[in-house]
Image 1 (cartoon, rainbow, N blue to C red):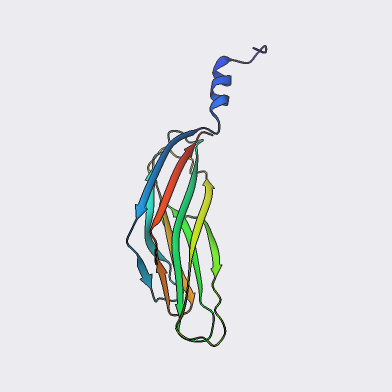
Image 2 (cartoon, rainbow, N blue to C red; image 1 turned 30 degrees about the horizontal axis):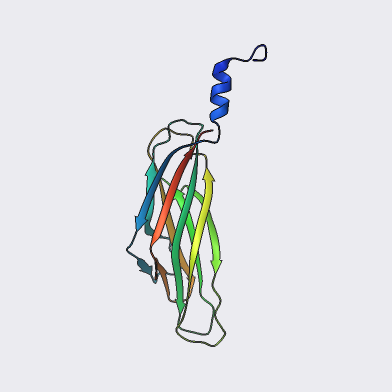
Length: 157
C-alpha cells in the first residue's frame, strides 16, 4: 500500500459506481388529458431512500405515449420527471409528433424511454414521478397500448 493512503480510503474508493439498491414499479393503468399546456401526473412513479448523500440515482422509465388531433395540424406532447415536488424538474424530453398534413382524427403512439442520473444529496425517501402534457392536438394518452415501468438504481458515489 502506498505511504499515506489508508485502507479505509481504498475500500470506499473501490465501491464508487457499485449498484447499492434497485427499486422498480410497474404501472398497468393509463391516463389521458385534454388540457393543453397543463402538466399531468402519470401513474408512473417510485420512491427510493439513498444510503448516502453522495449516492447517485439512475432513473430509467419506459412508457407508451400517444397524442391525438382532430385537424390537419401535427400534435405535440412533452414528458418530464420530477423529484419529490413538481417544482423540482430533473429532466424531460420534447417529443414532437407530426402527422401527415390534412389528416383528421389521427393518433401517434410510440414507446418512450427516459434515462437520467440524478444527485439528490439526501438520505431521505425520494420520490421520482413522470408527467406529461399535450401542447398541440386534442388528447394525450399515457400508457396507451402498453404498460410502463420505472426503475431506480442507487449508485455509490
